[in-house]
Length: 625
Ligand SMILES: Nc1ncnc2c1ncn2[C@@H]1O[C@H](COP(=O)(O)OP(=O)(O)OP(=O)(O)O)[C@@H](O)[C@H]1O
Image 1 (cartoon, protein in one colour):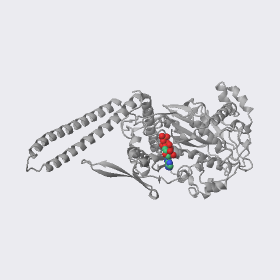
Image 2 (image 1 turned 45 degrees about the vertical axis):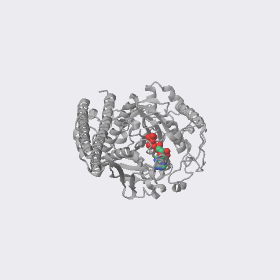
Image 3 (image 1 turned 135 degrees about the horizontal axis):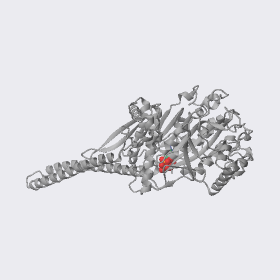
Image 4 (image 1 turned 30 degrees about the vertical axis):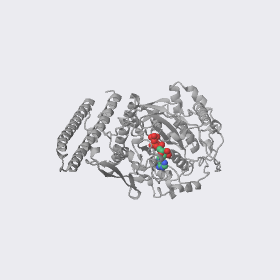
């Protein structure tokens, strides 16, 4: 299972409570009080819900917040019946999960002040207009950093930090060696220099004479977090700086990328809660009484289809409205006002995610899960008009990056899943690169994942990618793959615009629908130069390459056999009194070792080639070509 997943299993009672709550919320909390929602319900033949909802008391809000500032510590209880939660509690600091940074957090213990009745029921995000960002609405309280938390924050000490938050930030996190790796005496092959954001992977390679040597691969990223860095520091480095600008009409995306077991779950899981806490803090302090609302949704993309993780895996549809805004029809969105409720929603969503077994992982996430925290605001700062989106923070829990490659023992379905995952990882990377170059065209149609995230890619957006890596020698290849992916995402930020220019030249608005991906290459680079990608062309190139490799292999084997034949005769000659037999044997050993190494290298290349061929076949079958 992936980020946000494995650790969030619910107890039976809490599942029941959640289910009960969900039902109640679905039945009662659909916000149809607004005229526009009412219109939609009428057009959908659901006018009865309008009446039902208008009878709903706002005190039955999904979330709640302490009105008097008193903090009810440790109220969270798995068996709590949420449907009866009409009482109010302090919404913060209720989990065993340590919040970051605890010292600063204390300052705001028991904050509140907003009357619970400020929060009316949640709503279904069914409106295309709902996905549009609110137009500029003056925010009283002036500076986002008027909140002492942000004033004191190391990350946000500068004025108007929003403009200084990088558009794309690539962070690498290395996990420590685990027990299994330590028991096997595996070496830690990754060295880090956090102060200079440098990282090196020391790969063991074989020379032709079979002696080992180390190849050093060096990388520089926006931040390098070593095995000693805590989750609090990860949050501090990644999402925390983005939170304030969500209130400034910004959409941001944070995702972790890496092989199975590299620490994606460990890294991602705490982030939404920490971000929620900070968003709520801003809402209840800096922007108190200004009509801001926080909305929560959680869905997954599996096999190119969308499922609501908070509504019995209901299949969802994605639509575009006239102004090209993405709208996920039927996605249940919950209005929340405390982190405790958000935690319960996360747990509930995680318990419904798709997992399965692959060659790489017994309990593997086969889907991308998308958790969204959406800040909305009524245009006039009141509850009278429907709220519009101010900003959005999306956390994406990507399926492991190796799923597509480790397909050897997998069935057709798993291989198709792998192809879909690779396609979306490539498309995600291309969108991020295009974004970073302010390209007019963002290739969001490359996959369902990027289509869904389209509105997070346009306009004022921020992206944080956390590349998770394992330090052990056995993971070297995957670690290098992850770092190269991260490097490709970041490369254009360092001024290397060449690829982007080529890409722009090859793709025009009219070509949007022709965006092709070629997942046959190791890092699944797109075939940018060829609009009319033909799988047969690639197959022919691959087959030619295979033929050359097989020929080279055959030649090496024949050469070796000849040498052995000749040397055997010499040996027979040498094996006579007075001759230097040892010299002959040593010479022969050297020659044979060289030949063996050459054959080994060819075999490795053949194996690698076969992997590419498999990926190609999977891609072709999944693309229906
Ligand atoms: N930085 C870290 N410090 C300590 N332990 C870690 C760290 N990162 C990961 N771990 C541990 O390593 C194990 C694997 O991590 P995790 O489950 O997060 O990997 P993953 O990348 O999400 O894997 P999958 O894709 O299979 O879900 C877990 O037991 C986790 O607690």
